Length: 218
Image (cartoon, rainbow, N blue to C red; front, side, top):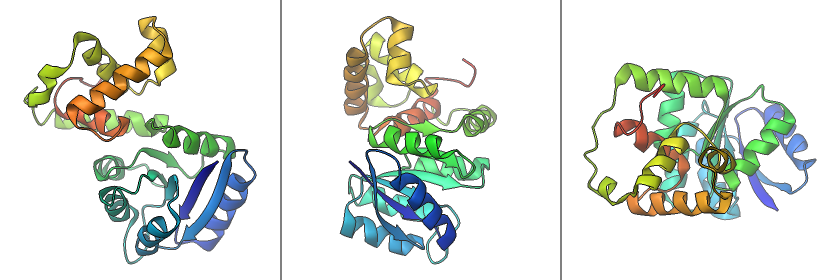
């Protein structure tokens, strides 16, 4: 059972998502928070697996709350859920440690799938958000070019897997692309994260682009 906390400053939104997710198999809504401060406290108290986090909230916004939750190493994955798909929010959310980013107009099934994806340790970006993010990386260019000392520890296949992760492919899609077992891909991804000192796939995406390992459209 995936335990979910919903953080949004609008009561009707919290209640709506709670009803939608509560009806989905394998998902349990364990709590709600009306702002970032309460979200941080509720994560510590309830230990959810996934936090659905709004961006614009009083007292503490969702991005700052995400940063605190990730820093506390609670194990909770944060799925940013907002009506805004602005580049600023996407990039800041990923840098803060969010594992995914969905817009509030997503269907109930898409929302539930998103919860399951991030709970399983994969990154999740809405298609429109992904396009905007890649365009932003293209505009800014890489901040460094293969300067990270631990990059040299990656094997050729691990570099290949990292590049595909950065393109947003799931383990099953990478397995099909490389013609290997999905379990093999999962092993490679795990080794990449350990060798580079990264927390999850979302950090791997940001890392790959910032280090110039992958370029948008390349």
